[in-house]
Image (cartoon, rainbow, N blue to C red):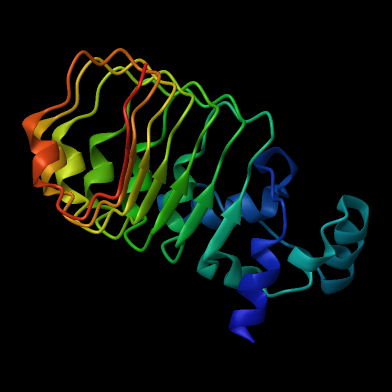
Length: 212
């Protein structure tokens, strides 16, 4: 049942601006925000019909914090709420084609995260807390405004795919050499003058794109 529930969530586009206030309040409860009253089952069902989100409302709301897949791409999101860190079971998070300028520090609480995709946003830097996301195996941040990467990248020893094309990077950190599992590295269309010697340490690298 849990597997079927996660699969349904994977195929569901859950824009944060469309999420019911009760769901956000549920997550924020772990961060000390004021809780919410969900009302009777009849009231919940009525709101589900009105918001066209019956597949969310008809499941126990508490299980939302156990979701493993979240797709909030192609919305008008300018900022992710701190409560995103409450979804500690997340393994896949997609937030492409939004207007994100930064990621919240609480994203570092997503220690189970394996795939993060936030392409086509306006990200200028990554929070240092992301260094705790040591299970990352795929990171896609292409077409943003990143000008540098910090040494936290050295914590991602499980990283296999790293897409950073279309940013404003002028250099890559030597800590990149710690990404021993890296197979695909795309840093094309940046402002790089040279690649660090650390690239030679990436013995599993199969595809390197650095043109432009």
